[in-house]
Image (cartoon, rainbow, N blue to C red; front, side):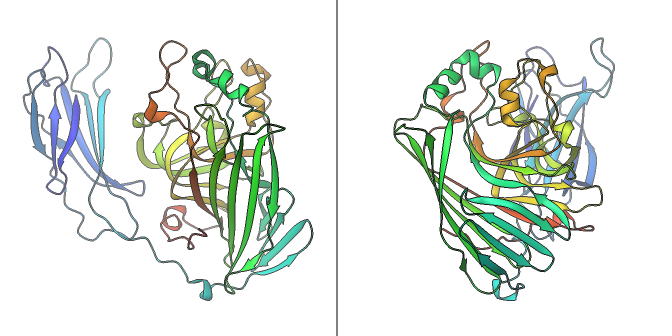
Length: 424
């Protein structure tokens, strides 16, 4: 069973019967229109009598979104379930689904102009830059080129980061498929970083930028990454991170990942995100998950493979919020999107362990905000990912916004606001 968009303005989709011998009389269908994690409309759909291999258009009788909310995505969702009990599954078991973004476009919510933001006070030293605003304080480590402390209204938001990350704990497919040997030979598991942090610059009373240049590579090797970063700190306590990565020298044909890692305090245990879910998804497996707003605890994002490895990534994420029980916390908004994962295990923990009982849960939370990861493929029993899902050593750009959340804030709405202007 397959559904394809034909004319979404008119609510028309094409249904394709992919069975070899069955018609569709054993299936029932229903549809919903959702936005911001809420169901706005729903109904049942009468399936046409399609013979095996036949294709016919059907019209979904939903009402058009006449006044779309600012920055809101609307989704048409179809579910195909068993219409009666079968020996292998009960009535109502889902056998197929489809999801389409409706053409109800709207602009991003406007943000406050820099001139209208509260002022940012900062003090520069040889090794640190301290930035302060109304009820928040950030300390930036000039030696390592990243934030080393961030507090808002007394709550710790960040212990360290974001820091560049190019490695992942190898998957079974990485090991058997030969990627790990290539990556280790290139030294991707032994990267060293050297930072050059320029003085902070005021971009108006309400914004301060911190430019950073990093050279990241294996010690003594010619290959390295030239990383250009700009942290734009705003008077409302938000931080925009712009990153440009240029690989230099003889790298392996692929990279494990390109992204950044943040270490968060244990209080930020509640996770909400808008993107694909609820399960893990990667470049070549993302279509197994629907777009929606999801919630979980950090521990619930972990996939306990028998052999510990990279896991728990959520692809095509627009925003992710990590919050304490009262609702305060940290919101990361992709510009325009990102991949994320959050664990109580570090990447190094997963890499070193050979069995799940060797993993010891840590107090802190390790949050990865990635541009991309290499595809998974099926190397342990089949081929590598196809070329379109491989992560090549090419120039990359990654941008995201970090902002504090206070009790009562709605990440769904805050994730729609326009970010500060890009630094480059």
